[in-house]
Image (cartoon, rainbow, N blue to C red; front, side, top):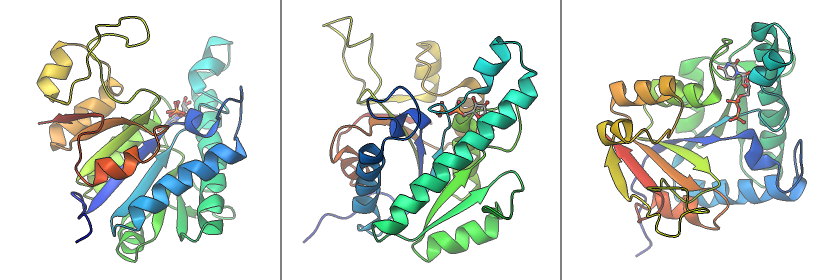
Length: 239
Ligand code: UDP
């Protein structure tokens, strides 16, 4: 018998940097294709997948603000960067046999459809991958918070935070050979240890909604699928 997924509907948070590969900026073709292959393996298990994509590979509002730009304006630029990534991601998905829909939190109807919750739920039920663009639609927030928000809205049973490191460690594994990976910990433990799993707003939202987060490495081949199958991969943060 083939393995059964441990989750029905998941929200994957991909940072913009996950699309960058070894490049210093933008979208690396081979990398985005690999990301989509990882996602396709999970959809083949019958799991409903929604993605919140970041924009840090193109622009971050905080950087614009630090250089003297009006912060809200810079944040809108950041949100537009996530729309570009979402378009690239959905295009790659559609080319690889998935059916993807981009939904934006800010109105740019000529380019992508607006986020409408019932529509998003319908797409997921139809087996389409929904890519949420433009974060929450508000400046001063992050796409981590958008992941928590959309995850809660669509009734995801898990938020997956894709990072470069394969979980949460007791210390920086690159600097400390004694660093150990936590297999799981509660929201309270993560807070006490100040582990910085997601930004504070995102973390608080998941905690309040009892929406578990799993931190894992999207660069480790097959890790995403193993998470969805409920195998010991990354770190689970739960209520
Ligand atoms: N952003 C925003 N509101 C949101 C989500 C994102 O203003 O709800 C802006 C913000 O400027 C942020 C940028 O979009 O720096 C890119 O998002 P993020 O930094 O979360 O991307 P990631 O680090 O995941 O690539």
